[in-house]
Length: 156
Image 1: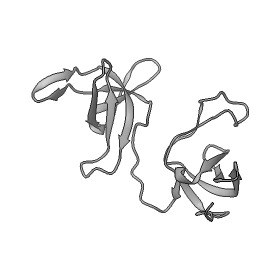
Image 2 (image 1 turned 90 degrees about the vertical axis):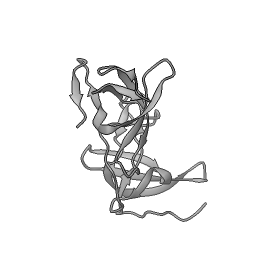
Image 3 (image 1 turned 180 degrees about the vertical axis):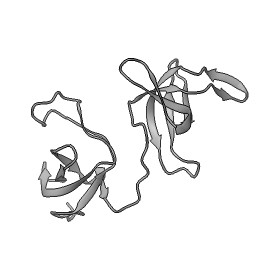
Image 4 (image 1 turned 120 degrees about the horizontal axis):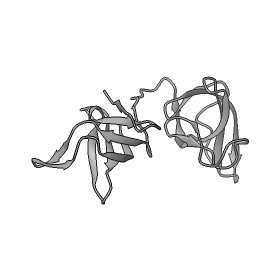
């Protein structure tokens, strides 16, 4: 096992959504605890199964302290590209989407984010599953969120 990359007091950013794996008390398994991009402070460093470093990170904004693996963290000062949507988010096409001139997704069709692509020169894009095996790479400005009442919130 290598030495910890981060130490007590270091500010870090979580690069993946952190969900309850059943070890966070008072919340259902699978509940989103910390959203990707949140910044916290390393409170402690320990190990799991004697071979994995686990950082106990306090996220002041949410008031939660959660365990994070090293690969889930970067230094808070490192460059970060925020995105409107994350893996598993439900989205809706805010315009019709076409392949080779043929419309394959009508405006208003719902899909699910499968992957977030942050490091593209043209900006944030997503792999979106629109059902029937159809997965498209879609720019952020062509998507909106679907809220609980199924209203579309523009992604621009």
